[in-house]
Amino acid sequence: MVRAMGGWVMWFEVFEAGRERGVIGSARSDDGAAWRYDGIVLREPFHLSYPCVVPWAGEHYMVPETLALGGIHLYRAHRFPDVWRRECCLVEGTFADPTVMRVGNGWAMYACGRPRTHDVLHLFVADALTGPWREHPASPVVRDDPRRGRPGGRPIVDEGRRIRFSQDCAAGYGRGLRALHVETLDATRYAEHDLDAAPVLHGTEPAWCAGGVHHLDAHALPDGTWIACHDGRP
View 1: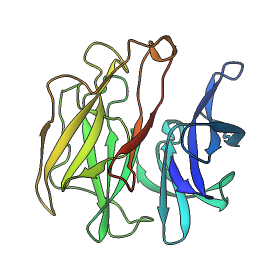
View 2: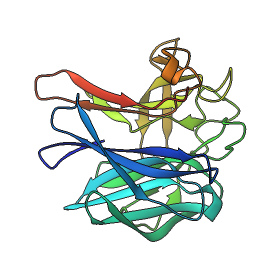
View 3: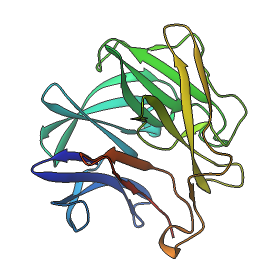
View 4: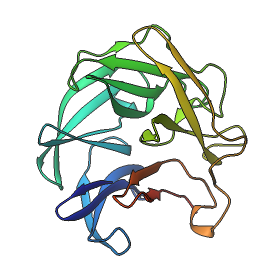
């Protein structure tokens, strides 16, 4: 979700059972508590999920998961917030849950390189959001670890610490979300560690998300508190 239009706008996967594929829906809220569903805003002939929306330079961009296209693709809002068009391919290859963040004067992007086992995390960097993107020298930054190998939402900065979220798939897909402190991220080096031994969210209860949680988006409020949304599967 992002702050916009005098409140909040949220995007999320809607699974169309009849077509057996995901599309992107949206909702709006004045206060972050009461939401109005606006309907489907992006549909393709292939499965879409995990919309990562990035406001930048007066525009809004989206990087959803587009596995069937064989690459990570950038979309731009041609009419915000409900008309999106594909702009370009950022990275070729089979990657799940691409997650873009601003780092210094450039950009970084996490993506899972093993969507079936969830245990390898790649890191890409670019000077501009539209690219060209290149793989970071330390990538893959996670190997053979299903607790940390699949992104779980937009990274945040809290008290000077950069924190990223990962899907904890050790006990099964979407069984929890972990928080990790990114200690080092520069031109050649990368290091991170778990903030807590246990996941910050568990895909076990309540019933609406008992089947899994996969995506957390947290935002700092002016009074120092936080507001967050997360998805779920019954």
